Length: 135
Image 1: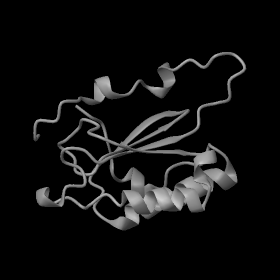
Image 2: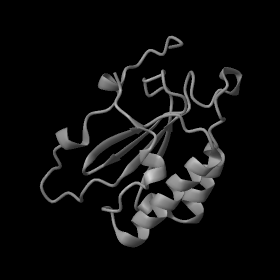
Image 3: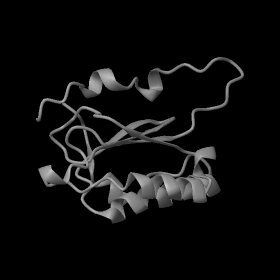
Image 4: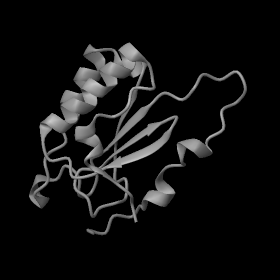
């Protein structure tokens, strides 16, 4: 670890622990992409996070109506390169070791499927292969 100040336990509340006020719309899925102290840092041998491309694709496909995209500072589990936290009504999925732009494009494809098929569309196996449980 390179001295990242956050830990996964104090960064985000579990989706299952969040209570919606009565009459509220269900929680939209959210993709939190780390671009902090380690993630996206090519000088640390990590793939650069294509944040501008992701934001452009989210706008072009009007995905923010269906899936939130957040590029954040350190998410905490720095033992994994290029971490992404996907939050849905089912809970949180931590993805680590995103090592190709194909992985980021697969996140965009997943968000497009949510837009077309609704929020219950599961993450694809190629992303679930990167799932980990933070310490």
